[in-house]
Length: 67
Image 1 (cartoon, helix red, strand yellow):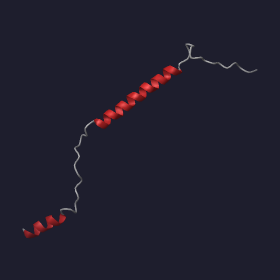
Image 2 (spheres, rainbow, N blue to C red):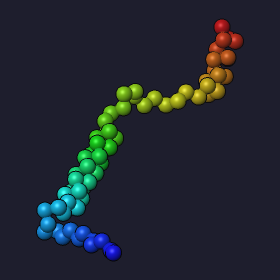
Image 3 (tube, rainbow, N blue to C red):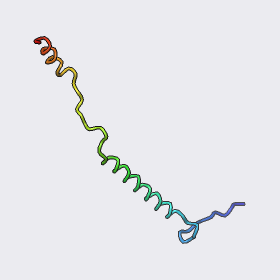
Image 4 (cartoon, rainbow, N blue to C red):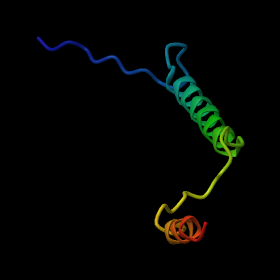
């Protein structure tokens, strides 16, 4: 014989889908706020342009040759 299917209506006390959806929305909102705060935080190391070792190499060699 077939078992009876249990149907839980929104008016039943066992209905928890709305609470789970509310919890997921709250967690998502908190997660997004944490990501936003992390992106707005100033970096620990200041932005310094990368040095180009070949850019000033000729000047350094010329200076040493003149001295």
